[in-house]
Image 1 (cartoon, rainbow, N blue to C red):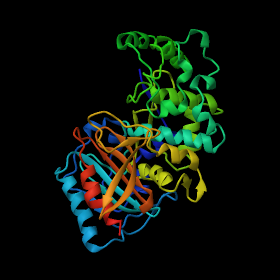
Image 2 (image 1 turned 45 degrees about the horizontal axis):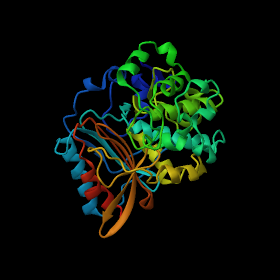
Image 3 (image 1 turned 60 degrees about the vertical axis):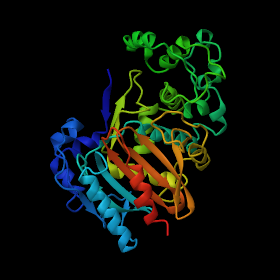
Length: 391
């Protein structure tokens, strides 16, 4: 069964006095009970909250007034109100950062300033940044991306693996092209004995029970255990393992303390879903991408890695993914047209409407949270928000 590990600072954040410390003007705040309860139980806000001049007591996130033309400011405010009126689906927050400062903040429906929001598959994009952080710190190299994942796992019995197991490199796993073919009923049986899937045993079991890995099987297939293959490598190459690395070398460095990070059956941190972050902390992760891997002016994620992570390696075939989207290292990339000019947008995207959208050329980061099944909000972002900063 999955469990959650939560930063110790979160316990303090659940106290009302601590919540008030980070109060942003009159932004809607969740209660201590809501912070530890089910996201589904959070009541919808009666009115949308928006702020065109957000403030920040967090030294790791600057804030200033939105500075675009009046008509564009009004259009963004109108969009926030329409989201609150459920005209575009069930969305919970829309935040905008421009040139390294938060300039617009809005909360709707279940969105709350101080509550960590479930991220779904946007988590995959954050896992990719973990790899880039490991490269920056020297635990991995760029050359390692093309090495078999089993070369990093010293507890694997290679004599028991299926043919072609060595074909799964970090690059292949990060682009959803690992090529595993696992019988679902067989895997459900294996999951009944989680002690046999702990740590690197997870990869051992996957590579013993898959059909042979071939060029034909190594095509894009969303999910397919690839994120946990990557997390297992992170766990192996970092000095104290993935959990310690995530907390001390990533979240703590970004002053991210209000989060939930669920634990996989293997005992390792989840890599593809089941984490929660606040909307403001989503913005911070986007700022790293917008600044070619730098955080507050200093290298944080390898710029070389990030360039590959935001490239177009695969053409996702799923019906729910727009035709123009391409896939890099757990990040999507798509063109955005504004008045005849094409900009490149990179996205960490999760089901229900979780998005960190980066348009690096414009210095623009947009964070969205939601719980919408159809998830069609991007049309409003490309029609209203991005053009506001494109002049």
